[in-house]
Length: 281
Image (cartoon, rainbow, N blue to C red):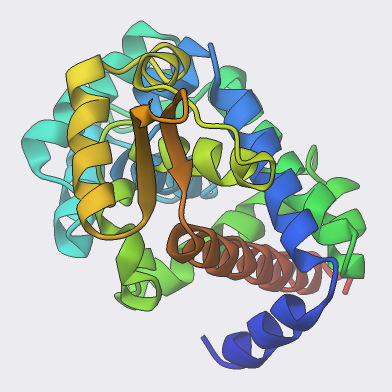
């Protein structure tokens, strides 16, 4: 998006940015750790983007088509997020978990859905983590934090977050190193966890990552193997002076800092757009 490259460059040039990026990663990883809804329902790019689409449709005015499973399938397919079958499965899971529910509609042929406060609260908490980090470097962070309970602000905020995706952008275009993480079940959370512990140099275990993010050990092993081959992580064994586990390599640290910088700039732009939309900018 226009101007983002230069804004990301300025962020990363700050001496304190590595610390800010790690704090954001640590708090995101902590929010997911042990939280079933986050670790099993909203733990990859596809599901997160689908949830944003749900929120965008939810915030539409009453006369608009609103949120329906059929419309969600069409949007997700057009954007290449996931298949109609996967959308149906995710909507069913969201219903079961009380994240979406049926709503009355004047058109009885349409099976309208609405997002519940539970799903909104999950997203507010994720945005709060990023906006707190943003507040350390830009005034948009505090401005966004002050309006997270304002539905008019959130509607415009979500619109702005989705705009790059509607234009075809995907995180792996700018940060291809993370492709093996972003669309794997729990993969991005594993990357956040490794990045957050990188300064200490203390290895984390496959079993610990599997427990934290509710995925199988074999699944973590597969991600670790691919990331090791790509030079993103190092795996220690008993022969390494008693050390055992995995740590982030500089290549992963750099990729995660670029990802956090991108996320913070996107948050800043979304806040600016939303403030202008509600007449507060």
